[in-house]
Image (cartoon, rainbow, N blue to C red; front, side, top):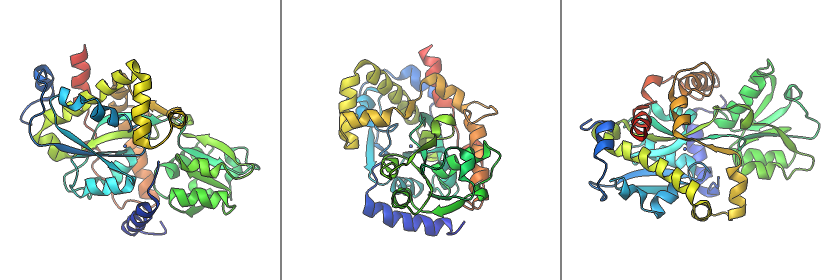
Length: 347
């Protein structure tokens, strides 16, 4: 990699703060589910970070509608304008949990002071991450030798790699222009690159270039970009009931969205600072996960729809490009006990 990770993160922090990104055992889980009939929060508030991604906006509904209290847990949802800032705060122990992707959880796991454990899949990117290209590029093979602007080591670099591999190509077959995603989209729009990997709202910038078009998106690679609720190992060890309550609350939110779509959209649009009409555009590329989807995602398998498999593939990718220097213990970053307990209780 051209810059080491700590230097990259430092540079990105400065960029993110200036840009304001608009775009994640004292009681068993089952015993908590069985006794979860109290209506008042107990204990100090736990703090969960979230940022501007369509799959995480629903947490605003939980706050607005008092759903955490209904699940007997006191939660402060802390909004971050910059996604990177939220990950740094979580890794430093300033949060009890954060909304982030699987690859970023792997990236930060080793340096996290309280450990990082994914306990819930909020959604999968299902088209919201895109490779945008010039009008003369019509298939993945046409990328050979072309300049591709992408933020190295993160989700759309991984998407690019998967796309190339699907046609027997390697990342080395293209010329990588390493830029933060917003800068990458701007570089493409101004003619400095032949292609760009971007997530919303930055692919809207890229598509402003005359003749530009979508070549491929995360829709073609189900499971490649899972967006998660990740909590500290400390929270799980000391308050598994609170971790369970977070999972329970999420599915209450999903029920609310299904039963009150207009009100849900209004709350999410306000949180995202977009119009209700704009909200629909970003929702289209986001597959919200049911409890059944969660159970499958946490299970073992031989493709990207299964997170244990996906984590191994992502780790190899990040190691190969130099984004991480060692692979964390992947068995410690996924914990399915809470979604399993929820599914059992629902039956």
